[in-house]
Length: 401
Image (cartoon, rainbow, N blue to C red; front, side, top):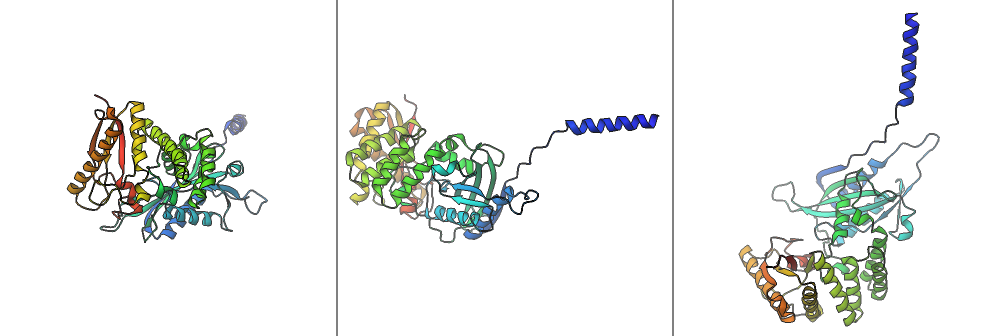
């Protein structure tokens, strides 16, 4: 009898435990990080395969293969500058080719608003210059890729690798080459953060909530890069009218397209809005280019022609906002630190003088300082379009008094 009772209790306990035991949630994949310094193509392959490995699932019983899943790619950027370059475009193409191969489980779809409801995943990616692990070796690129579930905004896979810079094209694409400002705001920062986010965590909300608008921004930028300025202007204006459309990329695009179309008044008005947004977020860096070693603006009027109204709008918007500012000069890596500290201060002082002339009330509310090359965004020292952002002037909001 005792044995039967124990057996009955044991049986009962097993049944109750079996009914109460919850189904365990699927495990969250771990991000893959490869620190081996490889050729660019190899590094792109390693990072892409690292993403795919985190999402591979065995086929359901009775099926041969899993249905292909749709992916859209928001154009990749340089994480330090926020720019698209020849290298980031090449990375995007290599990743898309790998994901869309016949042996893959993914279909790469155009980054268009209609496809956001069809695709399952959003892919973001960045490149960042970092020091090599090899002594005295040139810098390498850290590649970060992330896949985000478009339905709930959760990052489901993240992978990284490192690529040697073997003559990669780091020239900015036409939109970023022509841009008067550093086009890097909270939306772009959110994109960069999302590309580094471990699986199981949400994508940056400032970025993810604006993905629909980002598709229009992408189409507009492609049109600009292809010299279709009228189409670009219409698309940027469309993006500006959407929720979350007040972004530096959008307002800057309206300025660029208007200027290319010869609409000087519209361009100045658009630049004023760029400045107002930049000042309101304490994020305004303008690419004033000078002749080497001087405080004279670049001699080519194709480059420096709009500088007068840039200065006018910066002065006007700062006066309207009644802010105090530090005018901070920067230089490229070429030359000694002492020389560049002095030169960057001289250039900032020249910009301050021009602003004071435009709006005398700013004279007591602005001060000039120079950072030399200590805050380079690119740091190549090539003194051409590739490191133009290093020769910027920033306008930083400061406490008055």
